[in-house]
Length: 116
Image 1 (cartoon, rainbow, N blue to C red):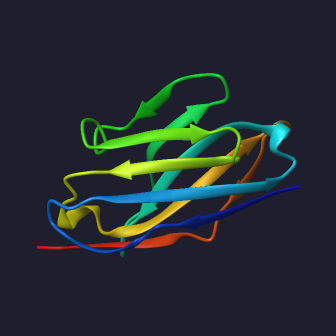
Image 2: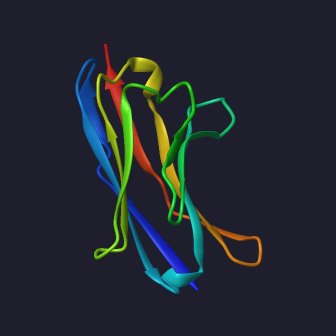
């Protein structure tokens, strides 16, 4: 079993920064990839960035040049550094672990609100 807990969301003005954290516990060795997703009100959940174990990060266009995905192996944590935030970045942000055996685990989400 893998459990994920996100933190770091909050209210920030446009142009500001936030760093989201995703702390993993349990069978960490089963994690093949970690992704950050977001869901704005009335919209579908969308991929923001993803990192496969042993690989580099992948960013969707919405994140390129502004967001940075990183991992702290010793702390079993993944981070999403978000800079130059825009009001359209307002959403609930989730981390999702892709596990061996095609299973996946979602965190509970953390709210990010960007004011104009």
